[in-house]
Image (cartoon, rainbow, N blue to C red; front, side, top):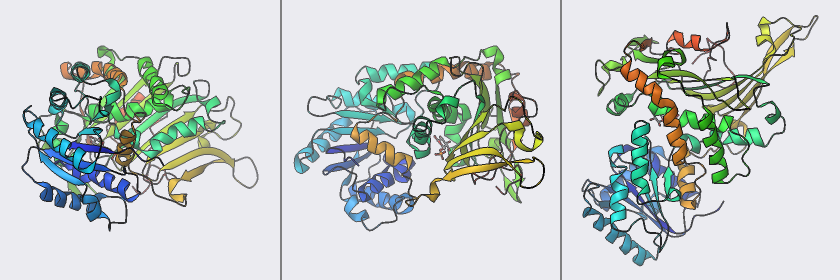
Length: 506
Ligand code: BG6
């Protein structure tokens, strides 16, 4: 694998949870695999007055707990490359301290002026930090490239996302901006492209002639945990669908790119987003269902309802579940429904896409046993990462009785079972300057444009219900009514890819 060129990584929001749980442990994992540059430095930045040693010991804890690598013997070596700089992100003067620190590192360790600024901060700082960096020339690429990585949420709706984009574009070019969507960093999400475009058998079937509908589920069994304050201003639609799940739709629905370079792939996903049929505000109740978990007892354990969670308004209407149906108006997908659902406090943690193929034109066998001859391809993103095809097979013995059987591949069957974490992959790509797995500005805008009417209708039309659902269930039952075909429901997946019975042990 290619090693990135020498550079400095600056992490704003260094005292936050993401830095400790994901970013620094992922950098350590890269270090262990010898995938960090020959010469590099990591500077943690936040307002707290921490000092290098304190920061290092916090990061040590994070690495010990969260790094994937089993080899923890290199932690002290790795920590030598980390330091800390206190900066008040809102004060332009304070950025001179950062510049001085960068200059010192540049000259002391002979590292070039190539810098990544990772913004792992509250979104209210996404404009101000890039602006303050630019004020002191830290966006200037004449002596080495400069990149900024921006965490989600990128905006709160179409208008605010546009404002943020416009503010960034005043000082930074699109090729310097890396909008992170950690779903794109997941191996199994990238494998959608490999499944589709490295196998001759799938692509000829991958269209409205052979596919009946597409279903994407991203379920979590946890609630909002300690993030009630953030989540109550966000909700499932903004938190999961606008970014992660629409990006997944982009990869499932796109045309083959002309090559695997960043622009070709991102051009194709953007075309998908532009072709998604808008849901008008007055039709939102027909196409979108929202729900909220209510207090309940699951396997003897009492669980709080969403409105009782810390940081949540007791009268909140924020959705912890959302399911929607939409169409992509182009030649490949005309008339084929796409269904997406996501929620917290569902029975299990699972993310998968199910391609439901059309049934045979005339079914010769007993129909009930095998979904009337319709095959399903299940692309399992997590857990039990893999892929599964459901096909009908003859039950041995007299007659022609048919049963559905699974052909499945599990990543865990590979001799090297190690799947790099999403952050590890994305950090490495940003260091290499490969933006393929980062969301481009126009795609983010198109995703907001599609969801804006839903957001507006939910805000203004009080008659659209927020359905309560007990913890540990698959959300409001009315979500089944979104599925067009009589008798067809969502799939009820289990944590094991091959088990998909409704009553499996979750
Ligand atoms: C984050 C959301 O982006 O993704 C969280 O803010 C959610 O609410 C998380 O829990 C899910 O990510 P993953 O990788 O666990 O599926």
